[in-house]
Length: 313
Image 1 (cartoon, rainbow, N blue to C red):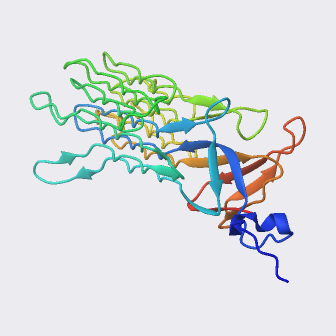
Image 2 (tube, helix red, strand yellow; image 1 turned 135 degrees about the horizontal axis):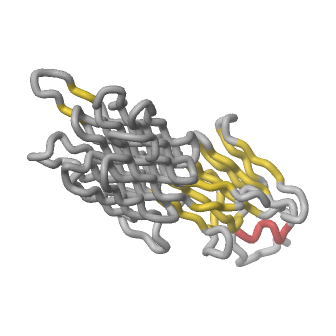
């Protein structure tokens, strides 16, 4: 005589069958978007540093995500540096925003591009909004961070810049603090990022803002967490560091010996931390899964440096 049961398919494991039953696991996350690019400094004025990519995390002590199956992972690229369009009236471009990074329900916004001021009579140097905001060019304000707004905040605003005759520019915002306001003829530092130990006992800092470009002296340093340095004098702007979400450095005023181009934003990163009992597979092969030694209790960490998928088994 057959045995009848009212138990659903999800209870198959109770009868000794596991086919079709998906593993469900609670995980911590760190999702950092691509940083914004620095702007191109024009003939008389420097330009603002790019804002850091948005920084969102549950580690330590935040609300975990519950995941199962196959989850797509988006790792945002850094924003391009501003470009020069030559001609009778050259156009000096602001930096582009970084690209969002996404895991499950968590989206971190790309960092805002840095602003550039084309001339003192027509200031157009406001940076772009983003995860952290781009720094302003001369006579302009920095852009807002945490755009779109989330709680806790994913970033900070770019620095503001004094009016002409100041020729320096301000730093992009970082995940930890806002970009530094500028004054005078030197570039200002980008805002510092935040340190996180989701990958193990040694903290790593992410999402620093790009330094502002200047007219004099090489002082527009990038914020900790991969922010690029601004151009000035003999210094060339640097890009944000790959897989940190750092903003690119702003371009310098093109006075004799100064450097005009800015730096690109650094790409973002997505990191997932799960209990050791979880089966995790990351693809493609550039992405990795490692097991942490004691005292981390054998936790597994999936590190995504390029877009891919995470499979839970």
